[in-house]
Length: 103
Image (cartoon, rainbow, N blue to C red; front, side, top):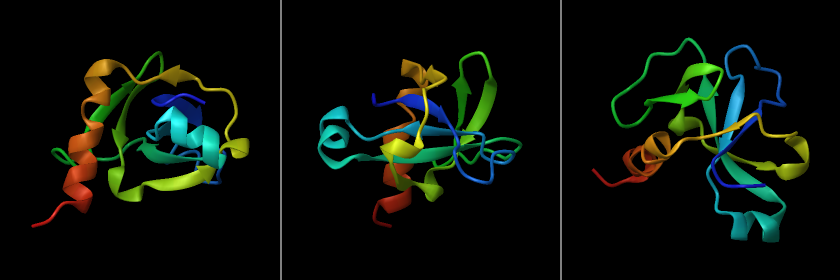
């Protein structure tokens, strides 16, 4: 399981949230058996910094729904369908900082 891999959503909301992107580093994931993911929403409105558009190679653009970040058992995730490109990886930390940062 690699950081920034994109997986099909194994949950029930596959229409609204077709993909999950793993944002946890590989070292931690290998020790815990779980990974932190951010849902990628279809047909959602992006929000500056907090919920930017990202590209799933070969699938189109989706909204990085950072406010819905959660951990999932890696056994629930099947084979990744893509990997987040560098330009979109750079959007993750500012989005997380926006969610958990101080105001």
